[in-house]
Image 1 (cartoon, one colour):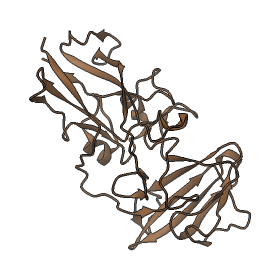
Image 2: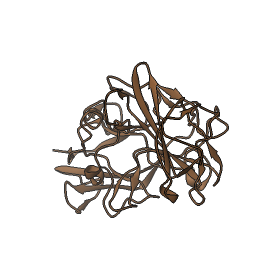
Image 3: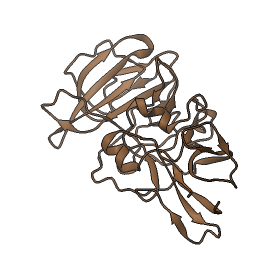
Amino acid sequence: MKNFLILFILFQLSIIAQTDETKYQWPTPSFNASRGLTATFGEFRNTGSSDHFHNAVDIGEPDDNPVYPSIDGVVHYFSNNGYDSYINVKSIINGKKKHLTYYHVVPNPSLYVNQVVKKGETIIGTIYNGAAHVHLIEREFMDISSTSLGNEINPVRPEGGLDPYYDSYPPVINESNLKFYEDGTSNQMPYNQLIGKVDIRIDVREKNGTSSSNVNNGTYILGYRVLSESGSEIIYEPADIGVKYRFYYIPNDNYVHNVFVKNVATLSDPIYWLTNGNGEKQINENLTVLNNYLDTD
């Protein structure tokens, strides 16, 4: 048995080769003022037919308030289906197409497909009564000729997305929920008796405001390093500078329980498996999170 310290990585390091630097305004007034989010991209969801990753950011807004496009574009399609109503707007930027979807938004009765819409001017719809938020989905750039909408990307990535967006609140690490398990089992291990292949479980909450809906979101970036007992030396660093998760893209939903602890993580309790995956590069290139562990031998 060895004595060591675990350092959690929650700050900005990036090895993503190409990033989307497109910035755009908020879809509800004030268009050019930062605000808190009621849900973040990539966090856990146990709603619907199966557990999954959240594919958008949620922007809190009173019911029935108007919603505007964040980027100039044309209406690609829309659906008026109660809580599941939405409008998809396609924009052409530098010869590529980008889709933004405004979910839980009832389409404006005068809206039509291929209609030109202007950011901050055209009311494309109103917040569904009972939703109290816009579920904003952004897609990656695609060739204009492609029939695919593209993969979802994070609308609050540091180099692009909603602008401005300021987050002065550090993530909250719930130390009482830091636990260690024998890899692939439910056999918990004392923190001072780690041996062999170890899974690390941690509760990390993204806080981006002061209201109850802003304090328990999933985090954007998470990783770890193992330090010497004195803390002066890195004795182990996982791939990609220790960054296990950076939710630029979301993994495929069948990996959700390799990221979030099954039957423990909830909508309000984002509890992660810190040791799974082979780093952020694998996730953002292949959308996979394979089983992994900390080898203490």
